[in-house]
Length: 263
Ligand SMILES: Nc1nc2c(c(=O)[nH]1)N[C@H]1C(S)=C(S)[C@@H](COP(=O)(O)O)O[C@H]1N2
Ligand SMILES: [Mo]
Image 1 (cartoon, rainbow, N blue to C red):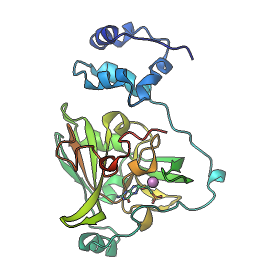
Image 2: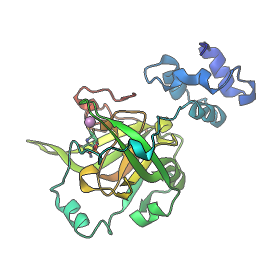
Image 3: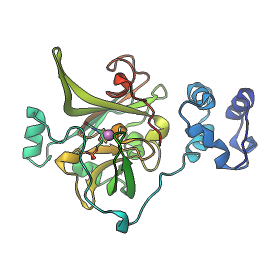
Image 4: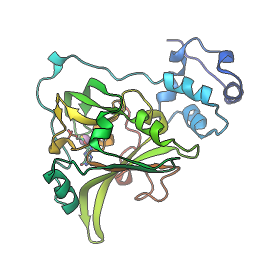
């Protein structure tokens, strides 16, 4: 693939002009935009002059993670991190098969909303067989099914000031003297709107087991396992991480791991 260099000024011009004038050979020319640390990507994300047309071009630059066939599924999905929860709220939901579960979506959205599992199952469905890579060195291929996160975001209407999707989870990943730390993770809107980013309620043709994050977990297929929050209680659209944990946007990022864990 030939390398295409676009100056900031050209890019800014392009973002202000119509997409038809973009001097690009094809979407592949925007591959560098998938590299989190790439200065151009950061600039583009920051630039509030981006037109929605240019943002769509950005999205089409997002390549799909590899997908596999049924024959590649060798075992059930491993379970890692939290695999069962002790909290009373979760125990009550679990006992009634998550009938009373409501995914709350709020923050910088036009119409805060709640979704039952039935609501989510009645929305668009995406099924994908993908490989989960954990930073600890294991991988596992499984078939995931759920609603594209994008569809949920479109329902609630993302405000222009929102930049990240924050997942607040039910599980206490750590107990400190000052109390429990609940798992939290976030992704940017580019990954949130990626076609393979789904809120999964099923794996390998069965409802999501407790160990894998029932009733709902996110799949972010181009990143490492720790980005894929399990046991999602609440989704919050935010502009920055200043009020979240230690300010790095995720439980693991606050403990020295990369916030963007691209693979
Ligand atoms: N809420 C929550 N989400 C989580 C974790 C966790 O402990 N709690 N562990 C993460 C890690 S490190 C991995 S590898 C995957 C494991 O998902 P699995 O149990 O379905 O294999 O979930 C991620 N999401
Ligand atoms: Mo992991």
